[in-house]
Image (tube, rainbow over all chains, first blue to last red):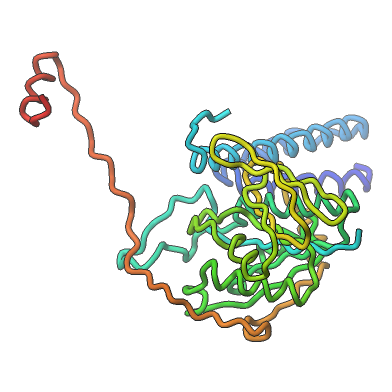
Length: 87
Length: 254
């Protein structure tokens, strides 16, 4: 694997691990899945393909951030705004 | 504009944690429980950082009062984009007594010391739900206040604040220096990502003691008892209408 991509993949993995700490189903659940997902592609050598996979990882990061934001927003709304509709 | 903004951030038990009351009814269990930044404080930080990104202000200072661990909360604020932090070290007995009045005295003293033009706070914290700190800070400084803000427009030396009030919105114009407290709909706070948290470690956090600011932390309040909300009683299933009527009769409802 080309060196610049290697560090990028590791960084992506670390960022995802960090985000996984808040995962609603638990950190362990997330960690297992994350590891499986990365191991599944461990033999990929084509740089283009690796970039594509990194982009997918970045997308997952965005999705997780959105998920956490919405979850918190909904919890606050339910607790403090009695008009009740949860959007 | 070269104004400084002070943002208060509070370390509270994470919103997703199930709260447990201590058996002796003196408070809630905090040991070994996940803590994070109060969600309304995140909104306050986000608003300040956006003002900075629009180049309307010069510097965002995040301040938190509490024990050593409060620095983690300040670090989160720095990762979201605040420029520097001030940790007001309050621990032990003083921390137990720390309420909105004491915090607002600290914030007012810091506002004068750091020469800030605007204080942004969360409207309330999700642990004690006091909703007082912003108002008290404004009163102590004799500054105008825009509470429950759902929109803030920065003008030359004043602010246009849209406030969430019962049954609608109120728009007010206040002169700066001022205090603004953030409501839920003000903005969508960004996530403090790992790379940003690492970068935030380079930013400076000053530690001060309340006595350095000349603030007296004594409290006139005494907590008598902290109790769980009463549990809903379990219901029963009935097989037939007759059973239902019998049960209702027996319990004296009809």
